[in-house]
Image (cartoon, rainbow, N blue to C red; front, top):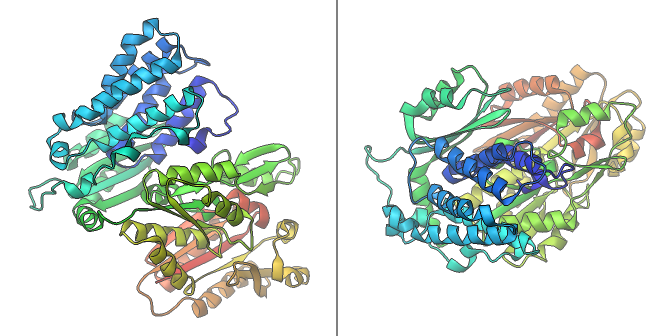
Length: 551
């Protein structure tokens, strides 16, 4: 969400609130995350059209946010984030008629929220039993602490964060989970429903309300996000699909198994994963695995745009092909962006592991390693993936899976080193123009110089530098050759296989390759992704690549 407003050209109150609300819908995870996204949606509605906001305006917007939050929850439970939001906003409403200092009002709201947070165990027996406060409510208090820090002229990282000093036990591990069949619903699920606009909240709610509990539906301008605890995830997905809009599955988590793992790992240090925007991972994967993305920068002349934040793949390709546009250039993330991303990842982790595009292709790794040494609140390590695009993305996914299972940084990096030996990529470009302009051809320079009208097949070496593999005449022959090469590269003996296709404005070719890969290799997981703008700038329209990771 911070990235969504970083560098925003229109600083009006309504525009900032709207950007936060839209980002919150996609970024939300779990009950509390979904509730916070509804808070921002309601807040944005309350500030609609306002360039600036007075204390009374803010109080009204917050009341709209609190009402939106309660309306979003099918069965509101006091003692959660609901209570803390409502009671702190009641304090703002009481003070706003005479308030003329937003900083003082923010401090009063924080004080009220902190008092309310301390009372949450009195309202919810499961919290009292585990000797913890509600995690979502604590998150809201931390959000307010950041607001107060900013109004005091401090950096957000300098805010005195309550969670850092309380050393709270793991509530999930400490609480009891009913093991009988008549206990709570087993699976925590989230789905994204698309549409312009998406189906109405009431329609979505009525379609699945009978299939579980903890139902929350958050609806933005182009997507709706649905959270529900259920025993029948497939029926929930089908019921949403029957409404007639496209549905993406974000997560299906077995809470019973998750609880057991948390009990086993409650004494283990948590590892957070950070990567850059060249990883090409779909948004649902980033959300599901709680991955922090540091965006690269694309520049058209003096116009600087954050990759996948300020400009989409489709918008970038359109401008790339426009002869009236200046030739785009790319830039690695700034030190401040790395500092902020590492700090956010470290908020809920003892260790942070960063995996970045190959150092042989970009200076991003060096910036990340410099930033890692500046982080104080956690141990941060920045590693070279020696790959790019989905080759990087697959390593990030595996690292996030291992971190969730309780593995430490050393164990994760050792496993990634092993997996790299059974992973690889093949890519091609439709024109050599962009690749030659990029200056990143490395060992393939002489090879590319003699291609004329032939199409190259490229890969990366053990250091992540581009290397030539073959040259082919014609698209049909090119696709056949890539499959033949992959047959000699993908290990025959494997327990799991991830495959993916990334492309620059040629979704039809990517879909065709996907069908062939699925028929030939039967991967356990298959991803198709448009290339990040930074990668597209160096490869050009019509480029595509195939990636695999075998375990």
